Image (cartoon, rainbow, N blue to C red):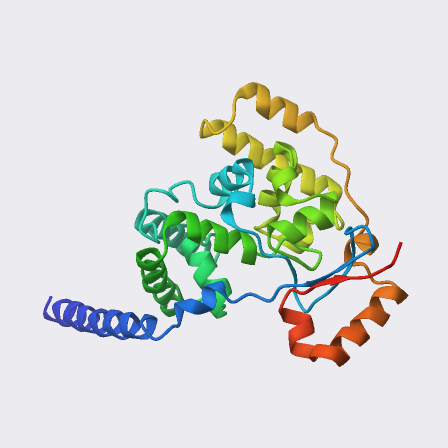
Amino acid sequence: MAIIAALAVAFAAYTSILVSDLKAQAQTFDLNKLEQMESASVILDRKGRIFGQIYVENRETVPYDQLPRDLINAVIAVEDAKFYRHQGYDLLGIARAALKNFTAGHVRQGASTITQQLARNSFSLKQKTFRRKLLEVFLARRIEEQFGKQKIMELYLNRIYFGGGLYGAEAAARGYFGKAAREMSLAECATLAGLIKSPNRLSPWSDGAASREARNYVLDRMHDLDLISREQCARARAEQIAIGSRQNAQGQTYAVDYIRQQVIAAVGWDRAMNEGFRIQTTID
């Protein structure tokens, strides 16, 4: 018994030191980085239509009011049903995932909230360790204290990867569906939400059947959470979505390559690739 008691005391001391250390480490992160995202420079034809893009990460950031409510609800349904009720992390969800991972003998479930995912993707916290997970929790708490839920959702949907080289909801909507994010249907919103777990594998450009299956799961979850009606769910499940071609979405043409070279020569590589210029041309 004495040995067990000593081990318990040692474990408690270790945990206390670890928590204190990670709380302090979480305070060192610059939360301004959350809003610093690379944005594609957009090339417009003479009528103001998007002709191509210049980018490192194909992203076009948009404000919260340009993100459709159906997309927000779809993401909440499959990624973080308690989003509006937690303070950055879900202790019960973490405990449940830890138990499943322990019984499985390997990591099967992550239990990361949307805020934790935002922290991980913004600061490249990629290691699958208990220490990283705990740091992510403390960092998520800081984010929740500094930003409201609306801003967190805006940052998340502008940063998250949707497969096919598309970052953020706006680039994904234009790439896959040829329209702005605010114009997406319920079925299209559910399609994007369904990609987040495994964006490249579930991309409509990679596996249309798997993408539709993921979309339907999202719609069912939305219905289960009373975010949509049974009729809305059925209509969205039946919708035949037109997926744009990958080549058109990426805009890799000789004209785009020439314009890219001219812009880089004028403003430099970093600015051309990251600052989101709108480049007007006389191209028909």
